[in-house]
Length: 300
Image 1 (cartoon, rainbow, N blue to C red):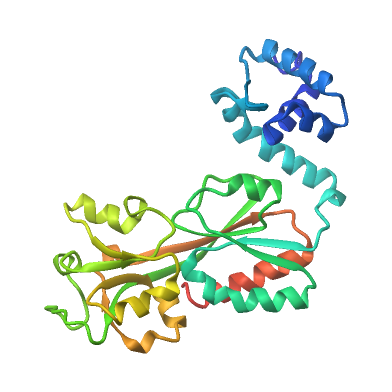
Image 2 (cartoon, rainbow, N blue to C red):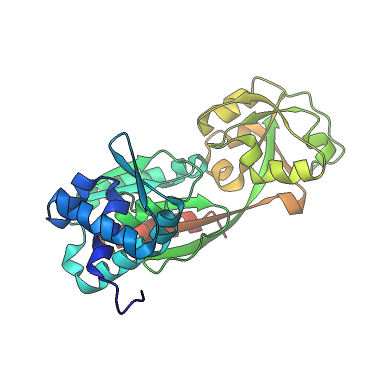
């Protein structure tokens, strides 16, 4: 079989099943009966030579082959839908943004302001270190701020690098710590003292810690906290260190209560980028542009 012989109507069924993982929900999405979905799935299995889905707990779980098709098929359908049927863009007044904890304090004033100016509902979604691509593609998330490298390009998504920022070592002014240099901290000194750790991912997933591990070193975490607002109070009552992004420290009202040391240059940079759908209502694009401009004041 080749493309000329393949019934492309079957791809709509595959697309719906990949999105919903449910025969019933796929049928509702396509306005056909569940039995029609099951029949189409049987034809797909015969044509593609793969079971495509396995039923588990009333869910259609995609096979590895089906997941590989999803990587290509979902962005393609979304791009076609956006290009051919612009009226299909979601008309709800909801804007959902995913943002790393260190950036929350910087963008929160903008979000609350735009909530009133744009007359919309805005929600900050808890950050997790993963791609978020599927959520942006299906419209459940409008904008993602992320650290690290941009992801694999997808035609219907837009990636923009905001810039880079330095990572700094901070500690309380009353901490009894000894360093050889007045401005920079050596790697040996960095791992000598306990650290306050505030990141929404495990230490072995953190790039700086990976770089230290490659050099045969590791940080000793003394206190782990979920909120950046806890970092400086923790430092001011201990002799621990913390590594924080320079933009967060610059924006903090407690920045004058801590001492600062620079990291070695090859460990000191962090990159920020944003991801959103190319097809977006004008009022959402305006919010994205304002947030990008604000973040750009801190990341060069």
